[in-house]
Length: 303
Image (tube, rainbow, N blue to C red):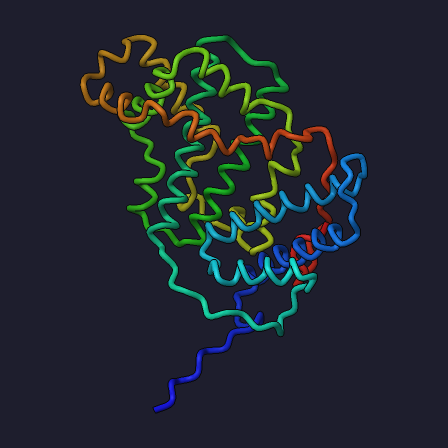
């Protein structure tokens, strides 16, 4: 008995938003390959920086594609085809996709939501311990928080998270915020200051926006999502963190009992881990330009 034929997939079978991300990955890989072929690898050659920027665009686009459930088989195929210099075509063949592990996607989104909460707690903790930051630092941190909020909200919308999942990912109760700010407090002044300065460091705004740019390219935009389905906005998170920080300043962590102390102990390494998205990819070449023209339908993010 003959085996049933394997299903055939092409770019036409891919949802439009996912296809835009795959096009970005494949076309960016093709541009990188073109640069390698032309051998402009000398560090003083300006085209070497363009190749570096292209790799950052591809890496972030792949990360966003994974977070919303684009099959890994399709992403790998797009990258490999681009590495061979082949640009995206809707008629191209694609491998059969494997199953999508939604629980893993929700776990990844939960990590991003916790990172947003940690940013608010660090902001409140730094101000209480070291005084008001400069307006420029505040503006940079607020921009990062807004971009992180958009990312979390857009991915939550893409995954169609349930009310129960939302409540678990971004709780607003007092006990939760006492735990978060107590964790920040437990890190010590040096770690708090270092984390704040990492968040507030000058960065290329286009790099900071890239995850949101990729999500909008995939036709996922928080501006079209009902507010009740989004995480609390940054200003509300900052207010929650400020209130919890003030409470701990007044009473001390010991007043909140063994549950808070256990939470601090259990999450003593959380702060550096949670803020590691404010990483070198965002801060390096902070003053350089990274040109991302308006995406064209079917072409992905073009540089």
